[in-house]
Length: 390
Image: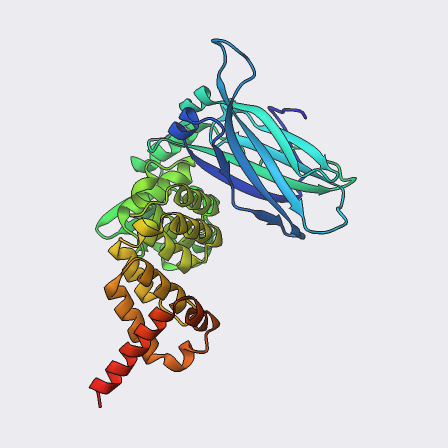
């Protein structure tokens, strides 16, 4: 395996992953593994891959020993006959050219993983920690069929950070700007070429005869000024200053303006920072935008912290708003297990009002075997209701 500091490529199928990693965690922990969501290549849907990023100690012993970060590309093929192919992995710290582009490639001959260690010095990564304590690292995975000419590059080419910050300062100070984003009573100045280069939505807007192009003013009603300012900061610099305060709203803005890199960054932050307090909001966002990887992580968090989560009234309200035939048995079981009286009462009302459809559900009928006392309680509740309303 070779390591490259400069490389170019002929583009093939590519998947890009951005890791949003808390520096304090990788500094203090050893062998802490961060996994990307599983992904597939468009033409090879049965071939699943994911990237893992791990911090370890270097092999050097004594006082000079230091912690380094390595990574692994894992893949599995569900087919019996595996096709010989080449995977290429390129990684870089976003916006930091001094770290270079590190890459390796390996052939797949029935082997199920590729490794690359001594990847970044953890101490060196301290230089690129943002205000939220986050390090952003990009991995670019490319798949080549056997026999294809392979050379290397990264989709995320590190840019000169000083120049990008200078462009941002021009926008902030209103220098050379040619577009204004009007958010409420605030006017935020920017440069059309930067916005168009980063967002297909802005690009289409400026190429049309829409009012925004004619007046030089974009009226933003969907988002608040702090969100738009943070989004623009990312568009100019590839960094965010504080995801913890607005990650959900920033994701929605990124989705609205088709900023895929920012969407990815927000999704990874959500996955890495689920708590009892924010699990409801993250779950709602994942449902709204069909973020399966985020929702899967949310579900695992809830399962591991069920008792604490169900004490959260916001989460219970969320469950109430999502009661359906499909989940009524599950919700009843939770209400019974944790003695949630008000929640159980609402569930019994749902069963009463939808009894013909509920009893057709196999999971509800299974309660007759696993929790007969609960079923008898519900039957008695329904009987009392109709008795009192004769």
